Amino acid sequence: MQAGKNAAASMKEAVANVGASAKSGMEKTKAVVQEKAEMMTAHGEAEKEMARDRKAERLHESEANKQQARIENAATKEATRVQSSHSEGTDLPEYTSHQRSAFQGQGTGEPHGQVVEGVAKAHPVGSTTNPMGGSHNPRSGSTAQSGYGAAGGYS
Image (tube, rainbow, N blue to C red):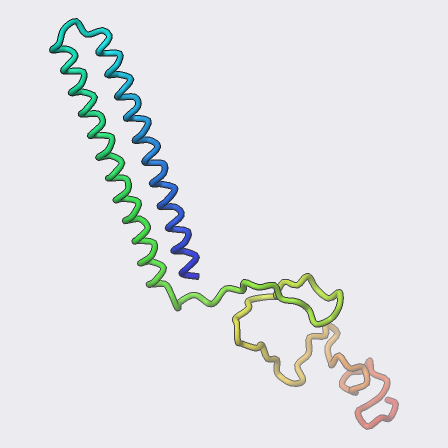
C-alpha cells in the first residue's frame, strides 16, 4: 500500500512540475513578445536597452518561480512519503484480489465483511443463525418443528 501512495505522490509531483514548466515557458514567451513590442515603439537606444533589461528580469523571475515550484512539489512528495511510512503497520492489509466462490453461480465474488489476509473466521459450535430459532438441521430434535429426535424416533 505504501508503494501505491509513493507512486501516486511521484505522479502528482511530475504533473505539478510539468505544469510549472509550462507556466514558466508561457511567461518567458510573453516576456519576449513584450520586449519585441517595446523595441518597435522605442525611440532611442536607451529605451531599447531598458526593454532588453526588463525582458531579462522577467526571464530570470520566471525561472526562479519554476525552481521554487519544483522545490515545493518535492517537499510535498516527501511529506506524503514520510506520512505513509509512519502509518505503515497501523492499517489492515487491503483485499486486492477477487474472491471466488467454491460453488458455481454462488455470490458476486466480492468478500462479505472485512477480509484480513491469513485470518480465518470461526463460529462457535452449535450456534444458530436460524431466525425461527433452533438448528438448521430439521432432524436434530432441538425445536418443536422437527419431526425426528436425536435418537431417531418421531416426536
